Structure formats: C-alpha cells, structure tokens
Length: 219
Image (cartoon, rainbow, N blue to C red; front, side, top):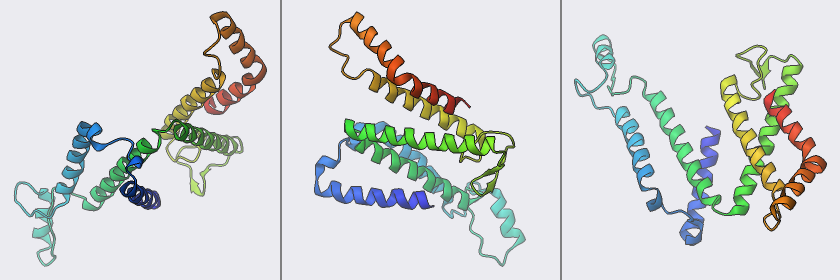
C-alpha cells in the first residue's frame, strides 16, 4: 500500500510537469500502442470480474449458493469469488504499469539511466550483505518476521526463489556497470592496445571489485 501510494504520488507530480512542459514526455503512448492495448484489456477484465453483475450463468455460482443460504444478507454476485483479492491484484498491476511508464520516461536520458542502474546495484548489494550477515549469524528472521525457509539465504525477501531471481538481476546490472567502466575511453584504441589496456585495468583496478561482486551474489 505504501509503495502504491508513493508511485501514485510520483505519477501525479510527473503528470503536472508533463502538462506544463511536453519535454517530460520522452516516449509517447502511441509508440507503445500494442502493449498498452494488451494491458488495458487485462485491467478491464479484472474490473469486469469485480462488477456486481447478479447475472445467472455469468456470476460465480458460489455467490448464488451464498444468497440462498443467507437470504437476509444483501450479497452481490460477481465473476470473481474474492473481489477484495481481485481489487488488490488490480492495483498491484496498475502500480507496476505506472512504475514502468515513469522509469521509461526518466531513463531515456543516459545520465538518468546510469543513475537508476547504479542505485539498483547499490541497493541490491546492501540487500545481499544483509542477507549474508543474518545467514552467517544464524538469525532465522527476515527483518522482524520469522523466516519461511530455515538455513536459506533470502535477504529481505520472504521467498528465497524471489530473492535468487532478484540477486541474479542485480548481478547482471552490476556486471554491466563494471564492463561500462572498464571500457570507458577505449574506443579509439587499436586492437592490441585495447586488449592490453583491458587486462591492465582488470589486474590493477577492477579485479578486487569483481571478486567481491561474485562472492556477494553467488553466496
């Protein structure tokens, strides 16, 4: 709920600035026509499932049974058997869509894209270090919540598989930033000079960082 509120607030601020200055809209919706249509269909279908249709054959038959068992209750039937859960998923997906849209607009600038990738790499490294500390220390909690899996590294995630996926993504981002830094100012070099420069940089400057990255994210 907090993340949804935060992203919603950011989207409102972005919308205000975009209304005043069209330069904030770096990617138009027309460029994402087909993905936008597909996502709109998904969101519309979730909304339709939550409508109190009360139509026999369309609404979930469990609601009809509930109406028969509890005739004094004003029970509205819908396609969804759990409208609250459906609403939760609707806003969750909508939050992801808005976040994607904001990141897409912001990351069209190379400088902003580098900042986003660097912030992900730093935050992911902090998560990994935290996970290693509690795992080595034998602390079977995720922050203040009991860990679902004992003797498993899950960082700040409850599910270890989710954390493994996240750590893999962060490792790829970190390696990309590492290679970008390694290859800076090498485009003008000839092939032999290029290889010599790369080997020298790895041996003198980058090897310790590379080792640390692999140790943290492969644990």
